[in-house]
Length: 283
Image 1 (cartoon, helix red, strand yellow):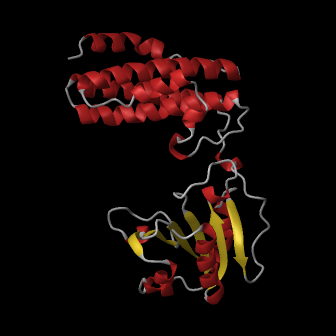
Image 2 (cartoon, rainbow, N blue to C red):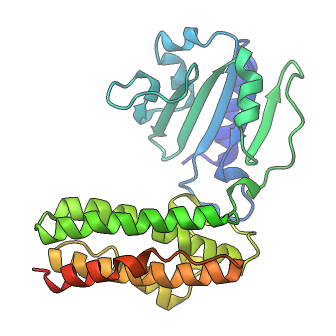
Image 3 (tube, rainbow, N blue to C red):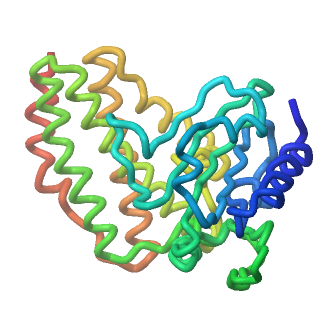
């Protein structure tokens, strides 16, 4: 596997030699000093170019970066519509295990790019000295943010409303339907837990995409309970996961609301009888 420096050298040499490329940036986890480095970290690279269309004619120019196992071009796919507008991207896994997510951005959208970039962005090449001055890379944009009372209320409203659909699926023996809605409930549960972690740590932590660092900041007992809510291989197991999910969410809601001095939403009080009735009828 090529080292980080070897990969960066190849990328930067290509960019220096290609006159169409005027700016190169690196983004993402490689700039985050607060996380453990490993071989699975991507090279998130952006090329700001003068002629984006010329790169789309064929993919041979990408060969310089290494032999590919698989590549995806999201903006060329029919099943997954593009969300990047005039930008174009490549997601590439190389045979040596390195992975690069490469974006091509038209030069006339340079300002837009920097306006939308986050705190984990660093300029590697600026041939024309046209880039703004950036702060030193940090994960500040990704830290848990203090929720407003409205956010707390919306999270609770969404959680308890989804409960209706989950119970309906379980009662009808429609397991996949129930699991889908329990997954959405769990998302709100994890959001509420992330706010607790934020409170416990003065909102100074980044718990990662898809809550991937969550286990580092909760107790062993809570972590064990969270993982049990993912047991969904039968109707009975999913009922148990649902009940546990509701218990965790209720406890976290009380903690977060009290800690922030907010009124605690009372949705579950009104829906308790509904829950009890259908749980008692579970198959």
